[in-house]
Image (cartoon, rainbow, N blue to C red):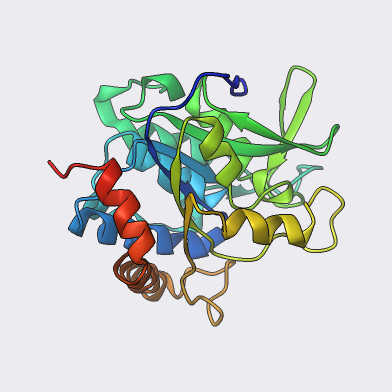
Amino acid sequence: MGSVQTSDASPAPCLGLALGGGGALGAAHAGVLRALRERRILPRVVVGTSAGALVGAAYAAGLTPDQIDEAVRRATWSDFGSFRPSLRLGLLDSAALIDTIRLLGGERYGENPRIEDLRLPFAATATDLRTRSLVILDRGPLAPALRASMAVPGIFPPVVTGAQILVDGGLADNLPIDAARRLGATFTIAVRLRPEWDRLPVVRERQNLDELENADDVLMIRPDLERHSQWTRHHLAESIEAGYAAASKALDADSYARRQLTRMLRPN
């Protein structure tokens, strides 16, 4: 695993997709992907945090929005972890998540898929507990990167790699717009599922968040998920439809975004 290197070269036009974290609310990302497909909008760079990393990895691996939708609807918590009260740093053992991840690419990627082998450039974000900083994981084995991005403190154990102790990316940045830019995105469709983690010292100031989300190179999509819980799977179908509705509204109503997307993309 590693982090992205920046470049001084002028970037070529590139559409990014940033998928935010939010536990079970991540089902909404499946609806967003369906809305993008209907409009023949094809992101070229995908970055995700926590649940957004899992959905983003599936999309980057080549799964269709329909396949992702089906997988989300039938998902259970056993697909992500098994209860292990003996663990000191987490209630769940994330070994079950590794088996789920291996199914993303099927035979195409083998038993241990690597991020750089996916069909689209992809990164998962995590938080380094030692430095309280964001870590962008864009190369190396996919499974530990996703485990790190989804390692909610107290629920999943952290992922230790070298000098880093990695936990849920949402602690540093719950919507990885900056990470998408660092992977080369010049215009980013960003999907926020829930607010930033409040009252935590690693979270950036609200003013910075507002500036980021209202930037000219960002189209924000905010599904209405206020009545849905990120800790239960009871509203998966409703969350998917909320994602589809919010994406459809944002993509159809924002004339500036339509111009940007039309200029950047030539539907195939």
